Amino acid sequence: MQRRCGLTGNIPVFLALALIPFMCGCSTLTIPNPDEIIQKPLGTESIRVGMTKDEVASIWGKPDNITTVENKQKWSTPREVWTYHARYGAIPIDAGYLSKTQKLYFDGDNLTEITD
Image 1 (cartoon, one colour):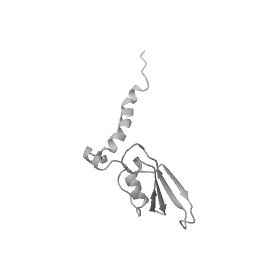
Image 2 (cartoon, one colour; image 1 turned 90 degrees about the horizontal axis):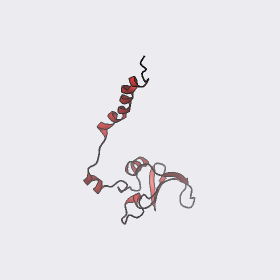
Image 3 (cartoon, rainbow, N blue to C red; image 1 turned 135 degrees about the horizontal axis):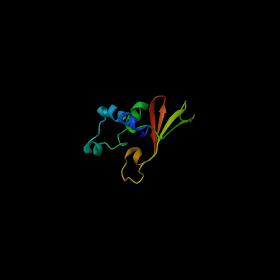
Image 4 (cartoon, one colour; image 1 turned 60 degrees about the horizontal axis):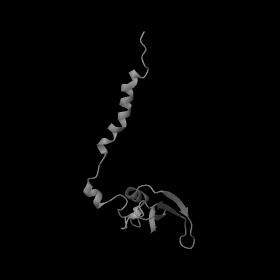
C-alpha cells in the first residue's frame, strides 16, 4: 500500500496563488531609468506652500509622523503637522527631507509652512 502526501496534489494550486500578485500589477509598474533617478532622486522634488496634502504625499510619500499643534499667538486654529525624518544626515547638499528633518504645517488641506 502506497501513502501519498496530502500536499502533493495541491502544489499547482499553491503555485498559482503565489504567482497572482506578480501577474496583476506588472503592467502598471514603471521603473525609472538611471537618468531620471539622477535628475529627481526620491524625496528631493520641491514642495511648495499652498500644495494640498495629496500633492505633498504624491511627491514625498507618507509622513513619518502626524500631529496637531495649537499656537493661538500664531494661528487662529490648530494645524496638522507632518514630520519627515532625515534619512541620510551626512549628505553634504540639501536633498529635501533626505538630508534633514522637515515639518510641514497644514491649515485644513493646504500646506501653509515648512520648517527644519
